[in-house]
Length: 260
Image (tube, rainbow, N blue to C red; front, side):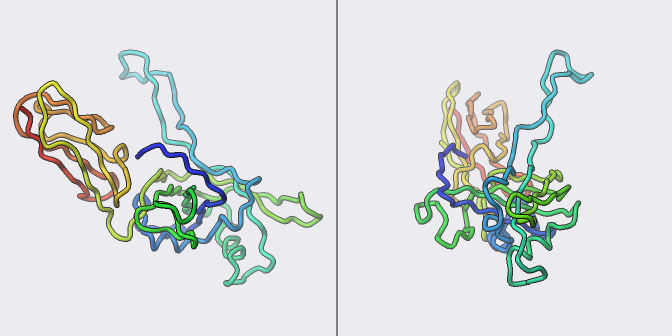
C-alpha cells in the first residue's frame, strides 16, 4: 500500500450493513459492498466523527519482558454519527427510514464501510454512480450501536439523532474489494547476490498492497524478508519468497530466487 493524497470533493462512500452483510468482511465482495444502505446521503459532516484511531499502548512491561517495552493493544475505531430522521417511518422505499430501522435499537451489531476517494471519473477513482468496483480500496468496521440522543438544534422537534458506535473486534483497514476471491500477485527479482538486498512488492486485484500481505521465506539461511518486502540475500542457493493474504485460506504467491 502506498501513501496517496486524495481530495474528497464530496466523494465519500459510506455504507451501513446488518451483521450478516459479509461472508468475510476482511475481503468484501463488490456485490456485498454495494448492497449497503447509503449513509453518506444521511449523515451531515458536522455530526460525523467515525473512523480509525491509534491503538492503545502501555509502557508497563509484562512479567516476561527483560527490558522496557511498549505493548500495543487492538486498534481503536468507532465514534459518533448523526443521521437525519426520516419524514415517514416504515417506508421501504426511503433510505432514511431503512437506516433508522437498522440502527434504532442499542447494541445492534452492524458493519460500516468507508472509502474516501479522489475525483470521480479519473483513473482508479469511482464512477459517477459511486458504486464499488473490483480493486477499490475501502475500510470495513464491525460496530455496535450504543447510546443515542436527539439533536434539537433545528426548530423545536428533533431533526436528527446522534449515535455512538462502539467497536466490536472487527476491522479491515484499507482492504481491497473483489468481484470474487482476491487475486494476489508478488513481484521482484528472481536473482540476488549474497550481501545485497532487493525490494519485493505485491498487488491485490492490481492495487498496490505490499505492506498489507505477510512476507515469509522458505529458507532463512539463503534469504530473509522484512514485513515491507525487503529481501536480504544471505547465501548461495534457491529460496522462495512468499506473500500471503491474511484472513483468507491459501491465497499466496511466491517468487523463486537464485542467490549467488
